[in-house]
Each structure stands twice: as C-alpha cells, then as structure tokens.
Length: 346
Image 1: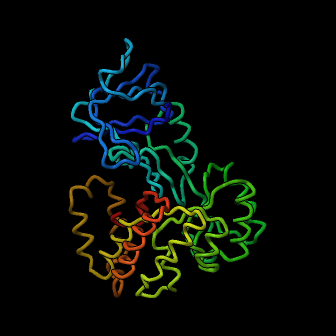
Image 2 (image 1 turned 90 degrees about the horizontal axis):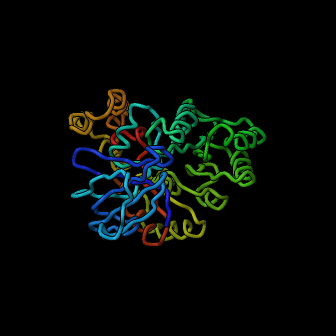
C-alpha cells in the first residue's frame, strides 16, 4: 500500500528523517535490514525489514530477502536501528527556525502551531518543504480567536459576530488550517465562529469557552480539546475536582466525537513547579537536555512564575491523570502535544 512517508530512523547519536514532499532525489530510497515499529501496535517489532520509498511514498515493506532493489537505489543501512512512524506534536507555539533540528532529532515530522504562528511558518516553510529547499516538520497552524482581555498579540479578538464570521472565512487564505477558540470568547462571538466554521468547513479546536461551558463547546462542534485541563472548567476552579464526574465527562466526549490533546506532561510540569520555589526550574535548567535548547527558551522557563504561586496544583494534575486513561479506555482519540514552549519544561 502506498503511504506518505513520515518516518524517522532513530539512532543513538541522532535521527535520519524522511520528510513528506521533500525532493531528496529522484532515486528510490531503501532502509535495509531495519526493525520496523508499526503504528498502533506498540508491542510489535518487525525485524529484518526493507522499506522501499519512492518520491516521498512508501512503495513496499517486506523481509530483506523478499524485496529486490533496482540498481541506483539509495540504500540506508538499518542494522541495529529502528524505523518508526513520524511523530506529530499537535500543540506547539514554537516556530523559531533554530528549533527545527530539535523537533527532527526527536522524530517529530508534523507540528501544529496553536496560536501566534509567523508568516514564515504558515507560508514560507511549507513552500520550501514542498520545493525541497527545507527539511522540517510539516507545519500546520491554527488561528487563535480570543475574547476580551489580553490576547498577548497571538490571536484576534473580534468586536462583533460579523467580524468573527469574516475572520473565520478568511483563515484559510491566510495560511491557517484550523481555528483555535479561546477561553474568553463571548457567547455571540462563539456562535458566529462555530456556524461560520461549519459553513466553510474548517475545524475548530482549542479551549473550553468559559461563557458557554464544556457541554455547549463540544455539542456546538469543537472537534478537539487542546488540554486535558479543559475538563477542570466544570468545577468552577475548585481546588479539589471530583473524580466521580469522570464517567459523565467521558460519555459527553464520546457522544460529541471530540478528540483530546491531553498535554499530560505540561500539567505535570506545572504541578511540579507550583509553589515549590525557583530551585525546581534551576534544577531542570542544569540538565544536559536543557542545554540543547536555545538560550531564549531556557529563560522563558524562568519567567513563567509557577514556582512563586501559592498553594499547589497537585489535585488538578491528579484528576487529569485519572481522566485521560478513562478517555483512552472508552475509545476517545488522543493526540500527542507538548504546548512547547508555553508550558515551561514540557
């Protein structure tokens, strides 16, 4: 079966990425004698495989002795290595060119920017990938639609339902693939966004809109919740969320066919910092992994300020850690996302 290539050979010293639509060469490419980890079958490993790629598509997968390679095929020695499906980070706010190698080195071949993406990311990077001028994760982007308050310069705040409809209608022409709706949107703006998104067939993702609540956010057509923490909104910011509500929340999610990007590592990192003092972040910044990041990101960890908040976030994080497995067992589609670099340490 011909499939788009989103594969990375993960090595001890780095990774080799075969990027979708990148014109590596007109020659066929073969990963020879590699161990293949198939998608969706975490405990299966297919050893001694050859994977043949042609023009960015997987042509054949089979045992080494079953696939004949034509003269001129570019061979990549896969002995002792693993070939895995390319990873997708479906919640980032990072489009700095300096960070592209870090995504690739960790096998990430698709990223979804969830608010504040640059024109370079939305247009130039995608064009350069298609033309073979760049090797980078395939860039997807969401336009953040916010409500009254500080949008931080990363989104739009429509002043009226008519403006909201116009913003949504023009999103694709400006390079956006999705609409991300934010917590502070007012009910009339929410209704305009959702109706126009359905009309122009653009998917809405994002937060629970506080003015309408979780149930209406999902039943109105919001297709993906961008954080597991969004479910905490049903408790009106209670510091002790009630885990007995988990079955009800799971049923609502199943009934509305919503997807969820839990961001479990993000909420765990927040809990580890909340009220714990600055030494927590300084300890992370001293690790070898932290020094792979550009200086600006390391400083962003320091500026978040979670460590100086009062109380803890442990109960909220514990609730989300109970909720996510329940969503998974019920068959709710879960996506991987880090919220990097907005959630310090994610």
